[in-house]
Length: 206
Image 1 (spheres, helix red, strand yellow):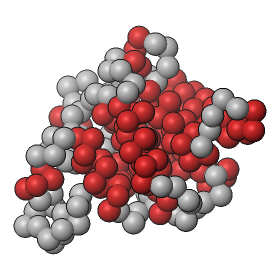
Image 2: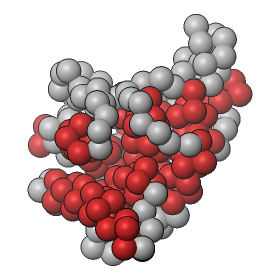
Image 3: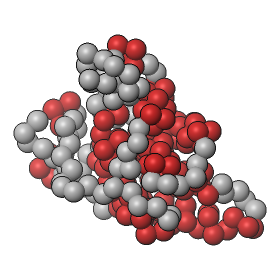
Image 4: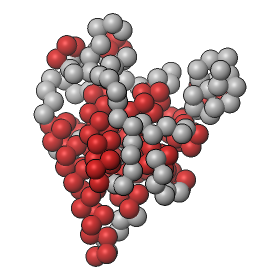
């Protein structure tokens, strides 16, 4: 088989080299090598890395990066440098931001992706691009706000990427692959704060 991160031949799904990479490098290597147009499938595989935590700010970089990579794979024009910038900006959102700043960072990461794709600046000519980024961030924020129970980074990732996939297909001029069946979270047993059957992504078979 080939490693799902670097695509080099491997005896396991993740090769020995990629198994010990820093998580930002895992995200970068995966996104540079994948041809997937599904942000959700990409995120699911990356989160399966043995070093990826149940919760934490690395999820912010993950969301931004897989959206930029999926956009590229669907025919959008985006440079590898913008993928690096997506990871850097997502990783720059502090841990605990979702609780202490009144805004969920997974939603902000969606806006980061759109901002980078559009090359947004504060200049007047980028007003339309900023509006696109703000609109997706706002939709994602409301989507997360409608959740209840314990906070869960996996739930936030799934919910914003579902929404962002539809948004990109409507607004961004590309066709990303939407999930064909219900998303089932394989991380239930690892999460002590799992909301169980109250979560739409809960899987009691894991």
